Amino acid sequence: MKSVLSALVFGAAAVGAGSAALAAEPAKNVVLVHGAFADETSWDKVAQILSAKGYHVTQVANPLTSLADDVAATRAALDAQDGPTVLVGHSWGGVVIGEAGADPKVKALVYVSAFAPDQGETLTKLLAGGEPSEGVKAIRPNAEGGLILDPLQFPKLFAGDVPVAEAEAMAAQQLPSNPANFEAVAEVAAWHDKPNFYVVTTEDLMLPADAQRFFAGRLKAEATEIVASHSGLISKAEDVAKVIEAAAQ
Image 1 (cartoon, rainbow, N blue to C red):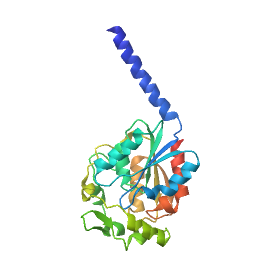
Image 2 (cartoon, one colour; image 1 turned 90 degrees about the horizontal axis):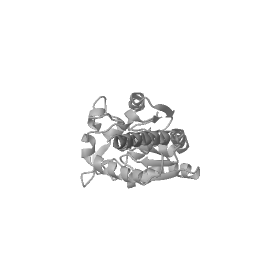
Image 3 (cartoon, helix red, strand yellow; image 1 turned 135 degrees about the vertical axis):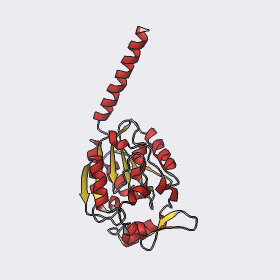
Image 4 (tube, rainbow, N blue to C red; image 1 turned 45 degrees about the vertical axis):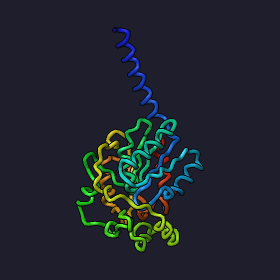
């Protein structure tokens, strides 16, 4: 019995030491999770910058069909990583990384213009605290009942600092979101146990800058403010990539 207990204690100590070593080791893996009214290509510019610097970058094609589906897609991407990983979420993607970020491979969480709910919270609850933003007012159902951002207003409200032709293309390829996502209850808030970084986009017409500052403060995150729209990951890709690099260290 004594030898069994010794083995268990030694094994637990080894696991703890391994976790500490993983946390101290710089991350070379980055997993990027997109938000609502977008797809994985919204991360293309950031991914190209990080890949050119030697990072192994994965852009998750989360389907926006449910929180559980998006978390499953993100966990599958994390399972494929070898070593410490920075997990990044834009907008709705912040909800997803809060759930999936408990994975022991995740070294740090980076929120970009993103929601960061605590356990038990929903987007509906978080949005109920103030007047709806211009962007939220422009959300409507498509013919199939999925939620989209009005394509005619998309360039101004979602991507005001992106070239118009590019913003129009983004509007045309946006993925619809399941309306139930607004009522999805956060069951995990991994940010309580991870180093957190937050990029605040000060000209955001979707998720106002003050709301982002609230999340950053609650996360006790290292916050960086950039003058950008909700599409700062595109218009200011270099700035966003720098924050991800800092998190990787």
